[in-house]
Image 1: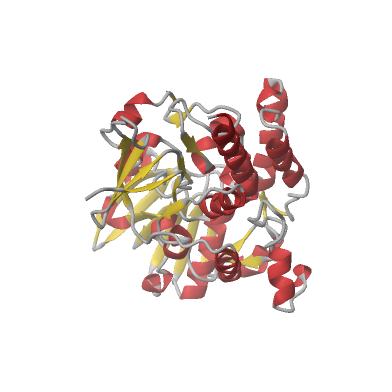
Image 2: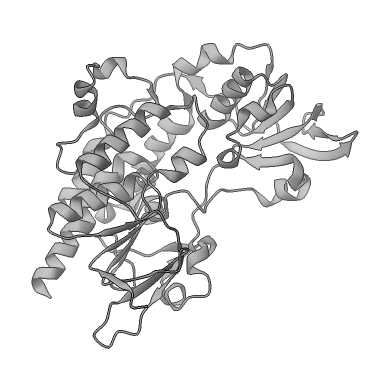
Length: 390
């Protein structure tokens, strides 16, 4: 079967992929998007979750189909939509997708590799439905999907049957009446604690190595200007002195990691929730169908399940559709992440990589959806310029 051919294949139909599809279409490209729209958000985030982002973190590089426009259409003021619920954000993205007439192919890429050119496409993607797509350019917008981080030490101590990462612990109703331990002490850990209490877990322990973060509203107001400047002045951020980049990343880290949103505090008042600051998991022993977990302060807790709120760590070697390919072998990597140019193009011409895998090169900003439209503008502009120059 002759493969379908496209000037641009976008792998991933989350915020970064959909924003890029809109920007590419505005630049007179007709991209093909692979993946079910917002599947990671729908399948790996629990209902009842709230986002830390505000209505200004929209997806439209053109500034038309914004979150504010979506809320106005529904007769809702932006200040009444904060904190932004997961359901409302999903509704906005679906509205945006329909407005931009983006129709992803609901199939997964199982292999992506370079193609034998001879006048043909530069890349070929094989889908799980057996079809193939030839592409002159590819953008990987795979987000967090393959990068859940389980610290090796915890993997050794905690039996696999008793633990799950937050991205796989989304059916919280199944833990009603159960005793849980959450390992991690940032926003996601405490939000999962609140959601587990809502779901009827009888005991929720939260263990973390540091002091409890403050319940203070995060200030993200300075972030959009930085990522917008990245789009308008490609390379600006990357040309900053190292200490300047590190200072920006440290400020973003402090907003995201040293604070907990104040709207979360009342939900943590449940007597079922116990905090264990300045502790780590020291050991675990299976007994009587449960797990006895001992913390480094000597406390032993009997639990039925451990939730790992241990974040994400990008590494392209963990992306299954790249495993064993010529494409992966040809990529220049640093600690598992791609070396990119100012337009998010990798060392393989025509292959662009964005979202979390771009954070070592473009800063922690690219782990947040606020960067989706800047990413889209960078890639779409470079593709348009390449089409003009040949």
